[in-house]
Length: 459
Image (cartoon, rainbow, N blue to C red; front, top):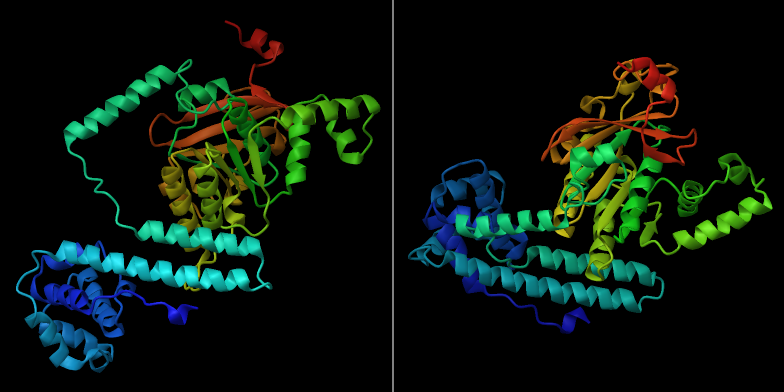
């Protein structure tokens, strides 16, 4: 099928661009921001542009002699046509005055080739009955995403008059939508709302804890609160089966004993309550994806698809370190680099979807070596890039798990005490939030110190 298709290209445009890059030093910054080597149709032109890009990245002078030397050192000079062809390219151009227009033309031709070849491959896969149709749909969405990312976009540079117009418009929107100071998605915890004003659009919120502390339960609580506001909530559960999340949601919303539910010893009364609770939960706009093999890229595809249907207002990902981080052609990257890439993609996802993304993450074992102490930013597993890309980092701590009776920072009794440390807040203050919970973490609410504590500490 692909053999019968004609791929568009323009040899002269490619030669003019390369000639301009050889001729004028101001040309390369323009082309480097618009083009990649694979956008050239001819192999020799790809090789030449790759050499020019290497030299530009290394801040080296570009001219006929230096480019020939660069190609020679990589045993590529003969492949591109020798010094004669390099000289010929530079002699064909008078100036780089129309370079940007030429780059747009070249990019458009590349996009058309990518569309033709991509759709052709999709048609072959669609006809191959050994290929799962869901995989074909995923491939189709990936192709559309890649093409869109490479498409020529409008200029995002704005002058101060335009910027101030949109800044005031957003401020007015916050004023109109603010409820008791909450301008984003209600977290469900009063003190956390005071610190954050709710989860904000475009923010990446990293929520971290050691295993077994309850980060999934708290994330489910946040997701449930968002859904109760009528927001379409997307929950990606890489670690836990969807039905187990369903168990926890039913226990959150009912008075069923967790032990009875877990062991199948539920009474008839509790079973009736479970059915009523499940019926109520069924009306919540929560979508759960529990695919075991999931990457940030596949999450983005799913989120884009649902966003187009108006069904993606907030995203939860449980959790970062379990996501598939293998990237084709990047097999030599270490774990920290993979985590850095995934964290960066999660931030870009929040920005692209214009919604909050709550990304769960693990803390390393260092958090357990400081007895009864609260975790710190440095305890984030593969922490550097996560901390850098996050708009907010919240660390979960349950001091009772350290077998201490009193939280040393607050003086509160530790039974049923949860501590959220907002360790980083790009757009606001850091601070500490306390909440209360039962032993199974199925009931979460604002913290109120016990009466005995209040009487003891009353002035």
